[in-house]
Image (tube, rainbow, N blue to C red):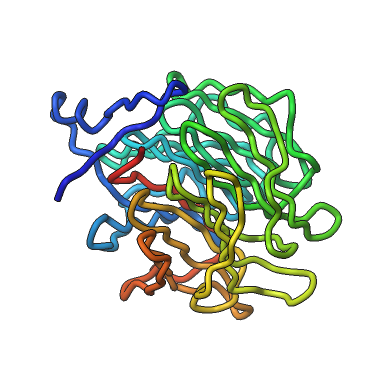
Length: 317
């Protein structure tokens, strides 16, 4: 299998962390990670690419946590931030992909909050936005894990939004609850962290999940709509012009509070969530080649909602 791995700089130049890994002898773990969730667990489930082999990490989060957010520095580490652990927390846990070990950042979020969303400019920084009706966007530089807070936050204070990114270009934070469910998509350009409005979702909804095929499109799946309740909808946003289409095949069931992660260039994974009677084990996989959906034979164990996702992709361009 041919593997390409890297992240785009602002000039568009490819930086190959995979080649660096070959030189240093590092063995990267290419996989999707789904962490925490109701009813407040520290468990981290791992689905190894390309065969989607499931395992549970021996070391989980630093505390039982639900309604947290995830983002990843491909080739290096996943970051899981905030959430509720009895009460809202500001914790940011870091999982090193080389050995799945966990550390906790000395500097957490700028405020304790749950119901936030994450996205990353791989090789540069993670962004954690919103939560508990805040408009705050915290940025963690991957070079030293230091935190800054953007001068321009979300267009409104939101909870239950979804996040994903076109690495090297922009982060997208979609939907959520801001006094009512919204369809808004805020876009943050990585060049200067400025915010603009992207094309909106196909309908208002919160508690949705995001994942991206970097360089091609963002996918926002599921959620809860004021009009119809839980939805199976998957909206796709082409990065070339931010135009939106809605997939003919949605999730395998209508649900909210799922988590998303992607093997960029190959497939998006949407895991867990609730269909109204507790958390589900389901992991739906959407092939980027034709947007077709399959459901993994082995899902989460146990099922849960309000979890977070991040991935170490085999390909990131």
